[in-house]
Image (cartoon, rainbow, N blue to C red; front, top):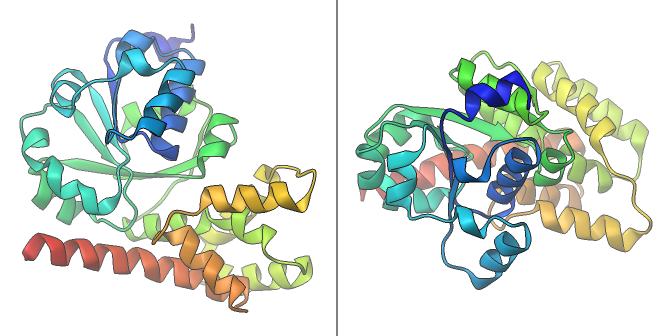
Length: 272
């Protein structure tokens, strides 16, 4: 076991929400050395999700949110943004390091909902995490979170401000977006255009080209794109923009705008 895991196994890691992202983080943690008894996961009750957790050998890690927040040292929240409102009272009594993986929901709003300090961390697609080719960004920085990322072979991408997370979130849609573009030369021109304003997107484009898997046929490619898309999410906004004929830079701008829309939608729900 690495020295990283010797340190991290002194505490438990909790994951609230076991959709694609939550499962990928859980699987990577266990595959790369975290003891199962130090992993707690919760999910929304879907039989399909339970079957997937059982198939991965993670069903013994299931716990209630109350137990998860009480016993964990680090908790990742990977639920849908609209579901964050139901977590408030449970989180307030926790002493855990709370990490939100919710796209578009800013720290000040998370603090208002959850009543505690929250770190934000955004990840690339679940497949890249499991394959050890993932990238992640966090705000603000925390050494224990950097240690955890290194332990599961995820590259940390430095951000200077919280707004950079919204750019990052649009940028990690690029593996799926690139597959929708037929002309590589036009694709590069689009990145040069938007990269002048958002250098982070140029960095993520270089990552996406290397991380893109090979596909045996168009059906496998279409299935990959479909798996990356969440209804109402940022990747869907980027892909729909490309399908409508927009160039890649315009599609990425649409993705950034979608993160802002999600924040507005959550803010409205909180103030109602």
